[in-house]
Length: 590
Image (cartoon, rainbow, N blue to C red; front, side):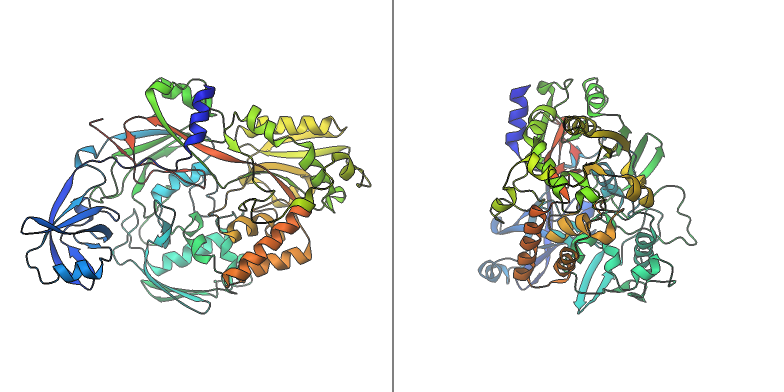
């Protein structure tokens, strides 16, 4: 087992490549415009962006490239070189072959996959990797991330930016699972639901940057002033200040669009515009089926998600043939898994596990308590002994920064637990320690931390609670310290730092109540700074400040390990800690 774990950690691969199916679609070149060509084959034929093509004239290859865009019956190439385009421009009767990622014979079949905590699938509640995994199949937003993690347009077929105003032109063919067209009113409604939600998440909190959203949230206005419907398919959104990370957030789960209730009933299930829709759902399971079977990116007949208490239970079920794959985030390889009958991939994520401290407590005012614990807690032992090597030690005390970014040396001197504890005028005799119950592995980590504090004479009361249901007022008065995952939408410095440390989001995206006014001012400047060089300088300055007076300790960065049957391809492990199943298919001939 030790050998297998080491091999998994060494792979650090973030995807299973598509099979070399050798399935081709034959078609014709129907239009040529400078350096770009169009084909009479589209998504209904299985053509999707990224697929390779060859163009033929008189039975010889005259051009090669990749598909950049496809609609139902038409597709377009990426830009060809000027020399190649000049050679083929005057040729008539050009034919082409487009190689498909997924062989037509491999379409169909079902996958059964576990999840480990309650699923909130509305855009305002999506936070955990389990929720992101399922919601990614159900929903679409104005933007999305492709298989390589780059932001690309989705429901927003075109957009433009003028000052603080973003104007989005919605895909005229986009529809929800209910059959209702996706319109500008739905985008406005989705933003309103984010703003009114009881609890904000790292993915939804960006809505407060929209002009008038904060006033709408607290009931002083009846609409969001910065949202304007130009026509049924066009909407403009005006921000309070410059916000370079705005599009990054729109490409995350908080940017998913849901239908505004109206004449067409939406029923009890979550309605989206994604490639799969909910077939049925109960307390411990959910089944998805294709929304439109003619769409090229839909390869499976169904996906069924079953709830388990932990990875060990899921592994036993997989060995018995009841599951097809298991995503495991920051946990040791389950003992029931047989390496001979499965394949695996693993990769480092950017959703760190952190130990946070309530900054309103007197003993934490100058961060002496958190600095003391940063030396008391042996993070290497957590990773090696408790997690079995299924996580990486952070390069720095902060998420999103590598060890070459900032000089932290002065912050680690003196490296003594006693030095910092002796600076606390009144050491707490007992601590209320909240642990996020959505991640079963955290109970083992919390026991170790509680033991270390007990050895210093501090009594610890652990409370295992689902962080998605925490009451803001109760948390502020009761919580002293907490252990949980932080799930940013991407590695953009704003996404990594702002929701985690912003005082105004305390009780929602963090429980730190970190009141340093100078720090909060620099954090606001980071959000609005448009110059990349100045933004980097602000990021590193904030990093220095946090390293010296840490309101939270980054314990480790978990690996995402995916164990699957050998005939499953097209899955993608993401840095956000979940698996992207949009391209999943079963290789029938393997």
